[in-house]
Image 1 (spheres, rainbow, N blue to C red):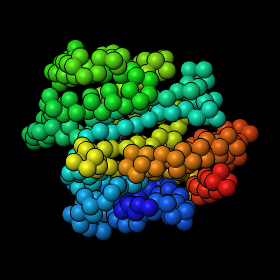
Image 2: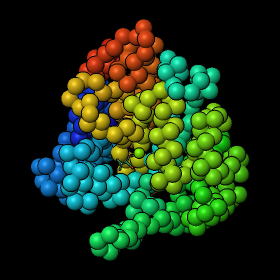
Image 3: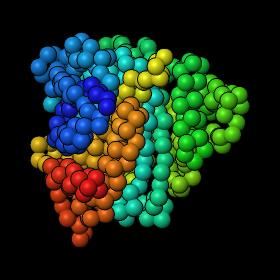
Image 4: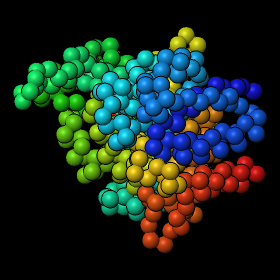
Length: 368
Ligand code: IPM
Ligand code: MG
């Protein structure tokens, strides 16, 4: 029997509503007693700014460093539009990623059979879709220096810096190749080497690692603009996509929508393995804080619950239990229960809470 420390950072907007549904599942797991979780909570993002004038306090960061994993809801909202750039809610999320060195962001885009008809693409294009986007998360234009606005008056100058080193590309490429071996054995490495120096280095390093250590994996180099087009033209050509921080941000939103709703996509952000084989890890839905529907019970909790099952797989070696929960999600969708974002004619609309309860009752049924 193992016990794990889980830090819950619900954040802003719909964060606390969807987190509450994941907690129902954690409570259920705790009642089974095989693997148990000790939960801690803290504020992040705008909620933390309101309480402490900081989107990520040192005290919260210390808890995050100690936890076996973090479950993260969402941050941001127009309420904080006028907050200083360095203190905006998103800066809290970026600090967590950077300080915990969570360089590998895994964003699976899986199309549940029951949702294929809900995609904006033709059903046959997305049915059975199973893509894994591996996004570099601690480098690139998100963190490169200088990053500033200079000048005064009518003619200012803004700079963001895209920077990548060999070792940053090396480690994310290895994650992608390793994952591909456990899936469809195919990697698309995505950059813009036709315009960007970082793209030239990216392609070179990925090609080199492939030649040396992963030549059994099928590798394609693809320009990012072409990739965005191919994702909506023929998404099933992809297995694993590995790309930089900014392209990964954009392409994963596109991939998410192929599956029917942004509300369906979980993610894992992982650090390097330590000597004991453990990785720092944070799990979060790909969607944002959706302040327009916050507090109304309309949010879809399935990406949050899916993020918990990713934690069970990648941090806690609970593949069997994760399968149970993921199967429950599929079953609930097959029963035609839908939150507002995935609602269709003839389906039954449920609230955030209702969706969480439906997943729990499926889990209980399956567990017997
Ligand atoms: C994401 C989000 C974040 C990002 C925002 C909230 C800072 O869009 O996780 O994809 O740009 O990385
Ligand atoms: Mg994004």
